[in-house]
Amino acid sequence: MFFELRQYAIRPGKKDAWVRMMEDEIIPFQQSQGMVIVGSFTGEEDDSVYVWMRRFDSEEEREQLYEKVYQSDKWLNDIGPRIPELMDREQIQVQRIEATKMSALR
Image 1 (cartoon, rainbow, N blue to C red):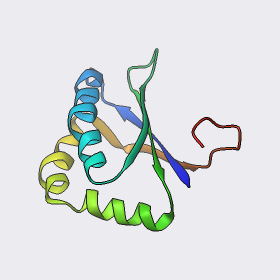
Image 2: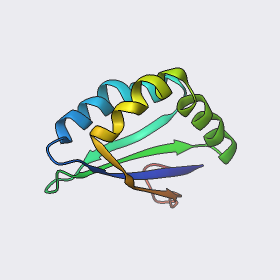
Image 3: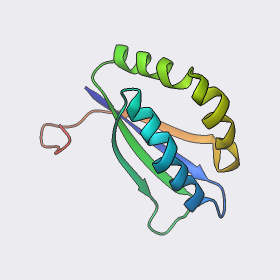
């Protein structure tokens, strides 16, 4: 098992709209396709910071879920095209991380 820690740069003044889109559309859609979303966070003092984490059982599962989500008509025609107005895709940071044996997420 591993986790994917994703950090995004939200455009100025768009934090609330981004969080609404994540919580009302993106997270529910990805969960409906089988993704496990572990957490979703905003910066306490920096409105441009949005971080979320997903869990995968294996690389094969990650590949299958990426295909299922990101190649779907809903993502390609509805969700995906609206993202750039709220978030700077050029600044996406993704880290694959593993929980240590003392982690509550294990």
